[in-house]
Length: 553
View 1: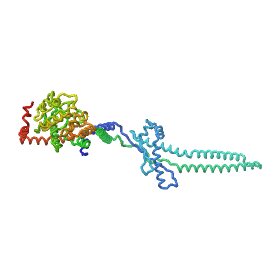
View 2: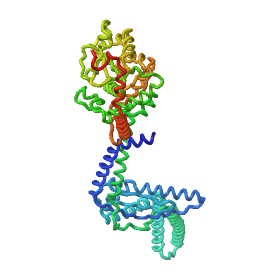
View 3: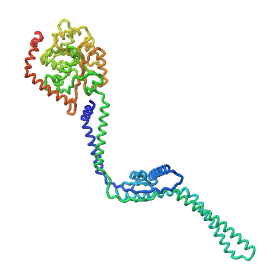
View 4: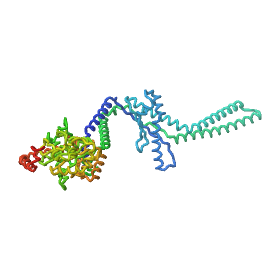
């Protein structure tokens, strides 16, 4: 059942899915075909990691992974982009340049790939290489900054010591070879000072060189291993891929819209919903009946061979099975709300019942908005109200013959100010009993059971009730409330009639209608071949003389 329902929904919304796919696919094709070709250039950089002792294999692997991830993030920062734009004097902003590059690193490799996409292949390669150079310079400056102050101090110290040694040597040269004891003592002092300065200079110079060695040892850097080259083939636009992706996205969006619409729709549309909501079976489904006036809505009489008429015959058959435990002598027809077509359904059901040879009376018990006299084109100056209020005239004299053989109508008569009181009177109970003696079936067309109490009053006095549901209009909650009210009143609900069903070739009901219509046509043809007129004559012989068609009052 779920698969069939899913397929039915797919057929129902196929137009929207196709439209969404075509629109988004067309837009994607138009945009892609009008875009200029793009090229991608890649520059590969090797991470020159400083050796570090004291780490185990796991710690070393974790450090290398984090270092590569850090470099990938640092290369994409705006300082690198801004410096690249400045060096190349690019006709774009740093934000635009950042949108054209992607930086990644292969797993388990100390290599960083800088990928640049541009409409000019030469410029794409130049940008990729320049980004690598800029980041290498910035990274080198960052690493050197940790030792810059110490190196500067040692540089200043060695320069000062060198100047001091030079000054001492100048003084020694000026003294030459002193002859006096005082001069010799001064020369000895200068030579001692020079040796001390040279020792301090050697210590400072050694410390400076050791610091530079340490800087080189622990500094990490990037080394270009494969500069970017101008690509020879374009990578985009991928017109076919984008078009197919647009088609897929459009179809998915359309499916989402259809799902939302179906999910938000709280109306009754299928027999499965009726069964799930209130647990009653569906007697049949009737499509929209077209007509210029009320009389033309009597489709079972005006066009008895149409699928709609066959649908009413199916309802007739299902009614006989629904009331198999009790003789179906009286039937109430109602709905949850107004405008759901209960009067039209009642009239056509009465016609198909009469077409089997049964004596049928349809009573317009809707004393607020009567319709049956319009459907059968009869006067409404007398009817149910006059029969209830006038004790001197027999009930049977209020009946009116219709053009349909074996079918009479008790119209509503003048609209009273107190319909509920009339229907709840003892006189109404007597009327129901009297009509059952005059006909094989009495059909009561009652008002909606959620708007007024008329149907709730009358339905328990009949064999059962058929509830008319306007497919796509009747709310699920309204149907539940209507069934609860009827059941609480003691009414036996024989089933539901789905009215105004939209029958299309993609609908499940379309195939059911066609199959049943073909079967009924063959069956009716066989019945005519077997002498259907003789059977109808036999049925007419059951009528009392005073109810014969030619002797009606």
